[in-house]
Length: 297
Image (tube, one colour):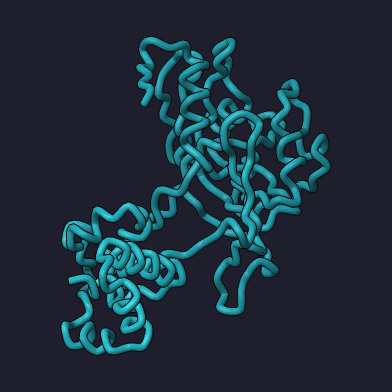
């Protein structure tokens, strides 16, 4: 493993390493306004949600690394502490990227990007009509993290109005990630998007405690066949199948055939059990996987 120490690197090198490693990052497409009424629209991938009560979002328009100048978004929220943060879907990512162009102050990025500005309900900056999600916010605080090029400025925003296009809700009234189709930022010029192939779910009990990987028998825990994901899923159960359940499963046709097949080859028997358990784990059948694994006693 190669180790880097920020104190030994140029700021641009640190930035490139961190932006390449801390991914994917959600994107705040932020509209702001200055006291003269000049509107700005720009994306920021140093962004996330930090609280629901109060509802707090934070994004960071950093000082430019190359010349230590500040961005119009930062200047605007210091003058008019309000912002509308939009979540951008894949169908608008190129327009969002175009809005990141460093146009001179006074140039309207809504117009340059071909987006429609509509009046917000509670804040002065307009919102993007085409965005599926628009979050009107008041700015509670702007916290500067430094004065040099690359220093962040945490814009701590409290959400006071939430606009969501009804078309992205599912039948249960929750936001459907496929319909929202949000994009995220990686390093360099790379972005990512939501696709059926890129999403997966992990069952995680909130009120019950899993046994943990440390409680998995060593012969299973040290398996060269089972992955870290497999072990995590095995350790997420509250309890193991009972001895009676394991014995009952031993009488199944599959297990009986396997015992005969590997009667004189215990090492292959163990590997085969782990391979079969792996198949069931990746199919979501955790209880069955445990019954298979516990056949090796």
